[in-house]
Image (tube, rainbow, N blue to C red):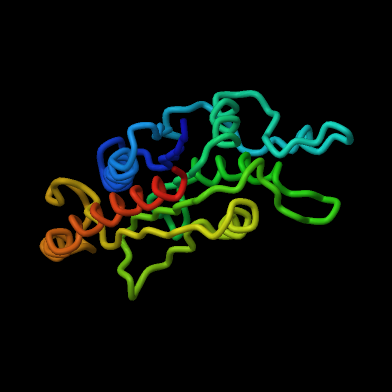
Length: 213
């Protein structure tokens, strides 16, 4: 059975990032019932970033999967054997969440060879990088996955990118100190674009599934 792993790097279980990743999973599952689609929520796990233990680089026992043992270990081992990978995160201060960045350290550092500086994952596979953010297509400060995007591209292949812009932050703006945002403008943008964003995620799921079957 083929497997797609979805990594949800957002803190909220039912808001923008989670909703788009759910649609991606639905799209992938619609192609073939033999494809397993598994979603992992990083905020549910107790794990650390790279510990610089260098266990992945011991002579004669080098590994391109992180050897540090915690709640992330089985997820990294699953990804090593998966057929597709999806990474989703809201953008905070122009970057992915701390949990996603920490995850990416553990994922990518074992790929890096300090002999020739090549990047080698256990296997290459299709990848989707998803970002949800307050910024607009014309004006945003997102650095996205930053330098980690280079690692992903070198080790796994050219990623497909999905973006949801100008997302709703809360359900009721009257309850929060958010005067810098126009709730009406946010709502109007969402009414015009949100269903399109969800459909784009669904379609991306179908495309990935079709690549791996």
